[in-house]
Length: 359
Image (cartoon, rainbow, N blue to C red; front, side):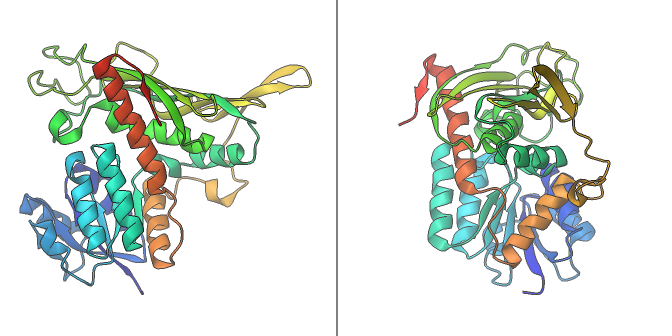
């Protein structure tokens, strides 16, 4: 194929904030179809990012009937990720679905099954993997520089940054709050760094402690307590089959000055690393402790130079390249499924007050 023809389903915040401007910078892609239940949003997206002959739809099933479309980007609320992705795969399209993979682990498993059966590519929008610090740290982990990573923390803490638009506060649509929204990014990073996708037991707790505050301080203005049906924070301990421990922390609103989002801390037998103040490695050498901070903008490896290509643009370009040249996707659906299974276990543990064991 000369250019990969892309259709966008869902023309809201994540499409306009990430997918559309990123795809527009990929020379091998052209956006030829736009769909949204509010057709004006699709028309606006077409006017800004579409080809001249691009089509607009309010029903995604009509869009999927276009045999000339190669790829679908699913940018809708969590509760429709699975049904739209599955329909797109069945229609012969490759699919990049925004994170999390699905609202439930069962739906995520169905997505994986259909991708395998149809032979179409399926990837999930964990764009933080594409950051320069993430890629550098992953290479160090894969090279064994940290040794066996047996303890890790997944950080997704906001002090007061509750998204008040769209359906973020709607548990029915989203399946949860900060845990499934931003905790999912941090957990994906930790499991990927550790290359460990075999959880054994999860103990977690979701809180509704600040969500009912009236006129609360918030980055995007006060939230409506009546609409805030998801948790405001959630925390968990995850034990893996090999004995490794992961601590996951997530919040949209928390009385904390320690604020970190989509970051990890890793402790291994040879060294440790964290993203707390840039990318830092720590350990012991010649009977002395050390801390090394990596300078990612000072040359050395061409891939890490400057910020000319953002993580989001790199995500889009690598995805389109995988489709066009039949390469393996950078984010595998099997990995994203485990993230969804752990998140669901945390919510279940919070509801029951008991640990959740994986078979």
